[in-house]
Amino acid sequence: MDPVVSVLGISGSPRRHGNTETLLDAFLDGAREAGGEVDKVVLKTMEYAPCQGCNACHKDGVCIIEDALIPLFDRILSMDAIALASPIYTMGITAEMKGFLDRAQYLWARKYILKTQYFTREHIRRHKGVFISTAGTGWENVFSGAFPIMTAFFDIMGFEYYDNIIANDMDRYKGIRNHPTALAGAREKGETVVRILSELKGKEEGTQESGSGAI
Ligand SMILES: Cc1cc2nc3c(=O)[nH]c(=O)nc-3n(C[C@H](O)[C@H](O)[C@H](O)COP(=O)(O)O)c2cc1C
Image (cartoon, rainbow, N blue to C red; front, side, top):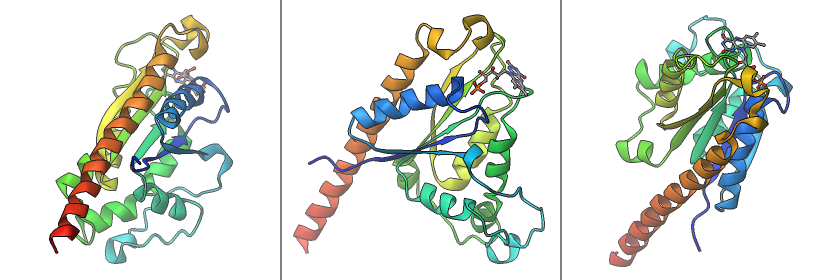
């Protein structure tokens, strides 16, 4: 039996079942069809505070704010793949998504200040991060402000920045459901990422089995 690949989608749009969450759902449907163990969290439904910038985590790697984000970050670290979804708001990501990402500062401190967190190249190759977004305008650079944020977050969490699933011109299309290729493309990418990770995990298990056989 193929090893199970866990996939978590994180929806950062304040608008439930809008363009971005619908695109995320298509990706997750594809991942599920390929045999992935799939779940989704919606930031809008969670209660959490923004980072206070107190820098206490620089000393001990622990966030002083004990809210719903701490178990969510723990959960992300246990996933094989994550998909962060945010529409473009004022040329960047939403407040919900940015507020969430900034709170990973204690994990950044573990990696870059305290050096208690380290991810091997192999670990990163086996953990894939996807950015999903939509924008109203047809401007081709409309997602450019969001990419470096995702690069930083996936790096902190030990995930390879695997792919973007982005669709602009939502105003002209009058919604993601009228886009000619976006939903089918997202579904296909969900299937592909699970297939790739499943193969990588299969190889990993094979290596471990032959290793234990040798002992
Ligand atoms: C507050 C706000 C700011 C926005 N800023 C931009 C922008 O800078 N550029 C753009 O192309 N679209 C912008 N949009 C449009 C959204 O990105 C677009 O409608 C998106 O598909 C909405 O996704 P949703 O249905 O998941 O909310 C903005 C929308 C809102 C509500």
